[in-house]
Structure formats: C-alpha cells, structure tokens
Length: 151
Image (cartoon, rainbow, N blue to C red; front, side):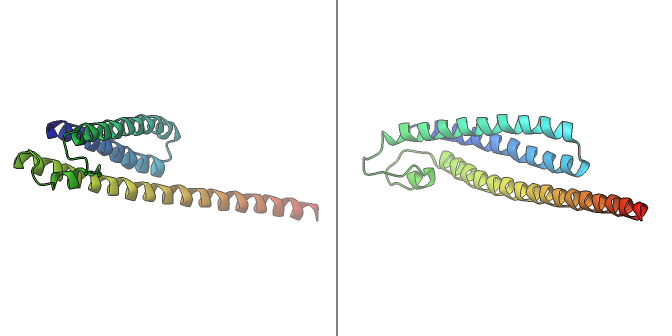
C-alpha cells in the first residue's frame, strides 16, 4: 500500500487551505480599507484557490479509493485516520504520524478559514447596515430641507 501518495495529497490540500485562509485574511484588510478594486481581484484569486481545493479533494478521494483496493472488502470508510487504525496494514510509524499530523492541521486550518469568513461576513453586514442608515439619514435630511423651504 502506498500511504506516501495519501500524504502528498493531504499536503496539497493543506497548502491550498492555507492559501484560502491567507486570502480570507487579506479580504478582511481590504474590507476595512474599503478597497473595492483590490477586493474584486482577491475574489478572483479566492475562486481559483477554491477550484484548487476541489481538485485536491477529488485527488484525495481517488488516492484513498486506490489504497482501499488493497484492504479487506469489509473496510467501508474513506476516513484516512480510521484506515490507519486497521490492524495489519503496512505503514511506517513516521508516515503514519505525518499523515495524522496533516489531518489535524487540515481540521485546524479549516476551522480558521470558517472563523475568518464569519468575521468577514460580520464586517460586510455591518458596513451594509451603516451605508443603509447613512443613506436613510441623508435622504430624510434632504427631504426635511425641501419641506422647510416650501413653508
């Protein structure tokens, strides 16, 4: 069995998720600076990274499916952590530890991306509310001035 391919696949996935996290952090800075042009360009980059993540996930699933062909047919899981626990599989402790470490890092960076996106959504929502309130205030002030002049 070739767990080295699984490790490579997980490394690619982690690196892509790290890029996504860095992009989300950059989006936050651009939201605060209100730099629409750079923000739009960053959205394009983010879409490319998301496509990369999707391709990495597909590769990971294919790699695990290939790996499972060498396992007993009773193994139904695609979870690499569970596969590593199966007795009798041939994998070095070093590779096993590296894979388990990558799985943990992937879970952690995924949580970080989710948290960062929640922060960005809050910033977008707060900005939107602020602009709506500002427009409402300006419009009501303009209407009040028009009414005052007519009297």
